[in-house]
Length: 425
Image 1 (cartoon, rainbow, N blue to C red):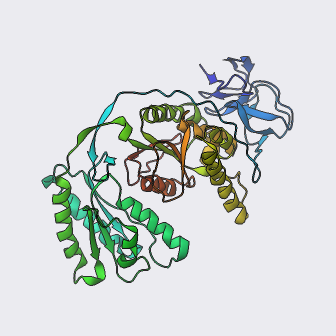
Image 2 (spheres, one colour):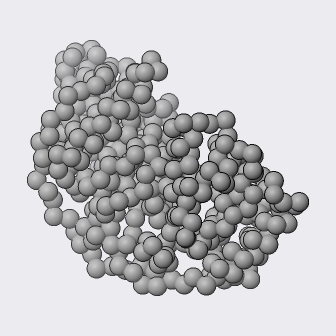
Image 3 (cartoon, rainbow, N blue to C red):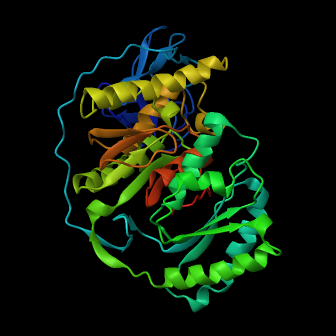
């Protein structure tokens, strides 16, 4: 097979390999003679498309023809424009729920006191402020140097960041929500909250956001110490001994929480890796587990599909707010809502944001949308959740970790070495 027609109603096919001008390509819509060279992942027209006519892929419009497009011609940025504009009025057309596959599977996890189950047993060092980032890294290195003495402790992470001071109001509260959520993460067997002392987000203030009864929590205020590294090493020794007591046990798949993410996408992502992630998500959700999908701007153009899968009117309304609030954010800064695809996306065959979004949401499978989370908010219900965060990998994956996913399934077409606080596969 040299090309694929994703949906029977599509007006374009996607090349699965580099195709030469003049080649006759067999497709489910018949034989097509190519009028241009077509790079792998890019599209060609299955029939003539008049100027202004919608271009259909995945069974939905990905934009409109900006000029006459002949059968066999390359379909991309030079002859397709987005249909996206500003805010929309949405209606709830509830889609019939799909029976998801249930699998009787288990995994070996770390059951924490609050009932959550981690897939790692690590030491986490969380700075309250960027000023102590270097100390946090040095303490993590010290902990790693001793891991050979503690076979049940798997790693030590310093979750450094550029925040914690020169912030106020909701900006500071967002930082505090995210950091406190990370302090409760089930992949951590022991957690050090590392402060400076004079920062806005000092320990006295930040403790109001923490679960102080959690025995995993330890504290160090650098300005209270003659040598903060030496004092920190003593605490790390205690933390290693504490985390070493944790053991894996067999738990059902219903305890697993996965994050869904894509980055460096190309024209094949939406027909290969993303649908595969969607099938994994459906199996996890169908077995009582949880998956969380984010990258809200990469839902623009495909949002109605998710809204129609909302569990009820309340979830539908929250999804509408999720989408429109992000659109308003762009508009308030004088930006258009459609300028998301990166140069790499376009080089890989993604033409418009609708094209990208319809491929992106494949990661959500076919499950009902059961929850909608704000940035820094933790998972409340099992099932498929949508999470407020941008497409930026660092920001969105931090939000996924703070929400409480055990790991992130991360698809890429162009390639990326990205990693974050939780295992990124």
